[in-house]
Amino acid sequence: MTDVTRILEDLQGGDDRATDRLLSAVYGELRRLAASKLSREPPGQTLQATALVHEAYLRLLGDEAAKWANSVHFFAAAAEAMRRILVESARRKARIKHGGGRQRREVDEADAILLPESLDLIALDEALERLTVDDKVKADLVKLRYFAGLTVEQAGRVLGISRATADRYWTFARAWLYNEMRKGDEAD
Image (cartoon, rainbow, N blue to C red; front, side):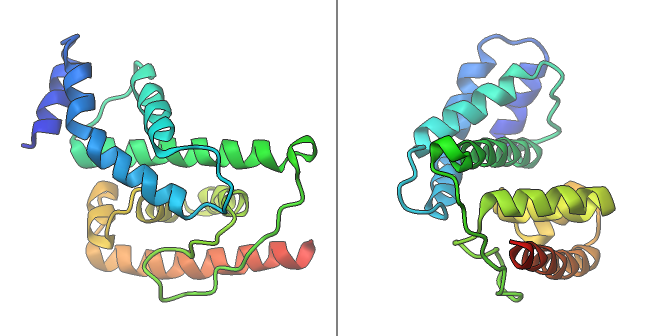
């Protein structure tokens, strides 16, 4: 059992000091994850990695019902919180009064481990929402891979599926997202 998992158990057990210990234990990894996600944003991004970490952490701890099984589950939840914050920020900036007129980009590297760095987060989020309706597990796999930076094997463990199934789902999801985002480009 990792230190983070122990702290999460203490937090869920009502230990008030566990919140501070948790932040100390996960801050470096969350900061690395946030910096990685922000490096994929277009130039001129005003959101800083520190602010992204703090906002995600507040959202995670603000949810009283949240129960994390272990550190992998916690980091997956943190990545999802960061994804939502980045998408909200992108949507806010895309509004006409904030200089809208975004451009969509294709996901054209079908063999890449991660989706392209130039990816439009709003287009990705819209495609992921459609994929969630069709197949939530595949959408969750993409979120864990792209936003949490987990390997196929780690994401499969979080989702409770085998490595072989995770590989098949990842291949399918990348192709599906590519087609969906390409359709969106053609509609513009």
